[in-house]
Length: 181
Image (cartoon, rainbow, N blue to C red):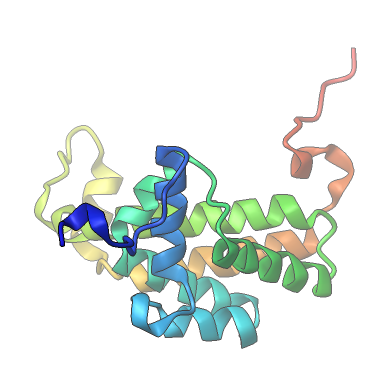
């Protein structure tokens, strides 16, 4: 029997985007046989917002390639949709006025943090010219590079901002306040 004579375990896809969605969803998914991330599945099902975002960050750090794919297109597989739905539901429960913008903000911050985390060791090794940037050079030599602490701090600030945002300036909707003429 030749390779072409039996049923293939691979599904046909319509486009490269389908492959991206399958790969992303496969990595995030719930099937332990197919390489699921059980910590992520648990977080989507049970965690509060901070725990969910920490688990998502950890997932993206373990699967750095996913950051690049998400940067090219919005994932629409069922597991990513469940993650997005959970974020929006948690933000809504917290009383955030614009849950979708807050979810985008948190997801983008998480994605960017996970994407840049692998370069953290080179941050310490790359010197800063004290003549050009004296404050940065001083802080650079004193500051411990703890990417998890930086992520937690930023996440806390973003969640606090989302909870206390006065939405009258339109900024939460991507608009900028226009000066009166």
